[in-house]
Length: 365
Image (cartoon, rainbow, N blue to C red; front, top):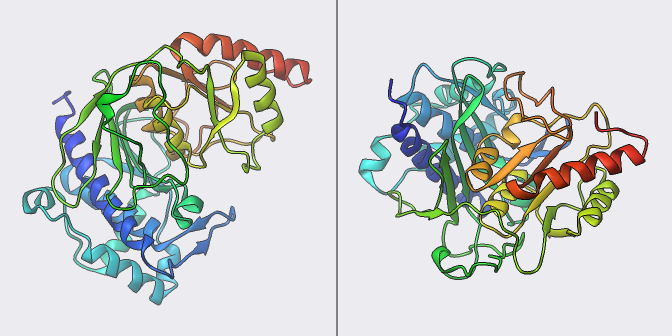
């Protein structure tokens, strides 16, 4: 068995790039076909279309692999107009480079598209090869033309092997390689790539992290993101969202204050974009303390991003210091909350979390 994952990485990168093109198309459409899911989060024709393109490309190349995706096709089956809109997008979105497009797949009909979308309804990632995908992480900010991510990750027996995040609006000044040590590469929710197709960040376990511009055609040259453990000249910078209602933001503030970090620091809604921001050295720390003890994260909000941050020199655990467990279903059922920080400071953050949660009468263990 090929353990290099070279083919998996290339197909995943091309699939994400093609799906990202579809989402960019939808950004120019006035009516984005927005629905509301049971948890009141929005879903658009871009979510359905991107999931169809991602799964079809991977299934074409790796037909025995399974999928866990955020969306299902049931809403499309009950709404012919919505189905037509999604099919129009999917059937017309192709890479300009014939060779690259030929490595993926083309769906033959709306019915086949529905079946492909529903391949993502698996619920067990504990054994074998399972691709986890979020067609649009950050749909709310996508609708505002801000930052979002097209996410794809390969798990093998529950372990992340490949992670690819397409960030179609990601923009920062200057070439990536010209960053000055000790200086931050600033990203912002509203600092978007209005002329191009943003950046793609990808990783394979044990082989580091790479970043490239996305395009309409073949994959462009990539640059390596060197692992980092130091802190920038302006100290520890958090990344958070002050409009998130599920998290205990007051505890986030207290923990940051305890370790001398800037909070909220960089504000970003998409969780996967936060991993990217930390990997490219804009931020050092992400804390997630849920208000409810029953709250658990969806695995597609973290698979891929966790690998990318780890390969860039970070560590990710839950509030008790345990590694994230992707083997127990569509949610991180055995992990409460999250700490993502650079390797050299993670233990300090973990100690601060235990102190703050303990002093507030809610021990971390």
